[in-house]
Length: 259
Image (tube, rainbow, N blue to C red; front, side, top):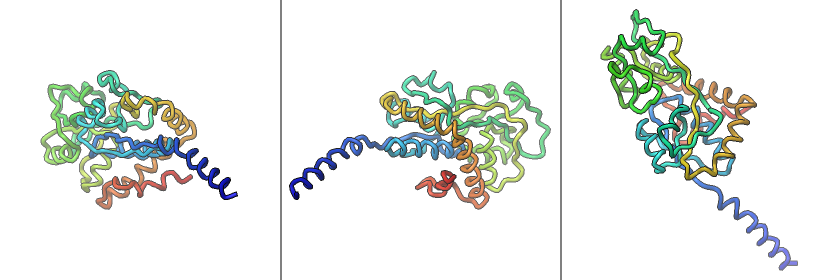
């Protein structure tokens, strides 16, 4: 009997090995200093955990994050717009989109700026973030001024060194709440909406099918919309208190998965 129990125990041990051996840690680059990525970070970390993996988020300047993901130095990029795959061929776009942004101009009150399209920005000094593709592509280059992060962009806007700063709407709101700036406001309506996709380096193509299945499920059952709303609500409340997102362990966002 003891011998039989030992054999059964050994069999169970080896039965569990393949799954344990398949568990991996993937490093995912993400543009720093922008709140809209946090939505996707929470979603992506959950999806990887459902596949038995761990996703480690690496915060980098936007352009460097994209370059390092494309080179394979990192396993992928948390979120980028649709067209990234056209110029960064090593990155595989995962369908469906998991998030979205609304490209928006922010200005300092009072103002009389009239902006209804990207072309209208040609009349103003416009601040953009280096490596944020939707802004680099759509803002007229002859009058754009590049900054390395949104904090510097906000400072330039406050000092009236630029007329308009281009932000994702949610991030612009977050940045103004974080610094307690009540005189910086969004122009309405937003200039454009961009869907955001998770990308993996082609060496990790084995992840594609599983991630597509999970993201599709999240879209169909309303999880993507619910998590996005809850993550932003929590982030805005923290910003009002001068607190940044809980990047270390994401514990402050754990409740977004409660139904």
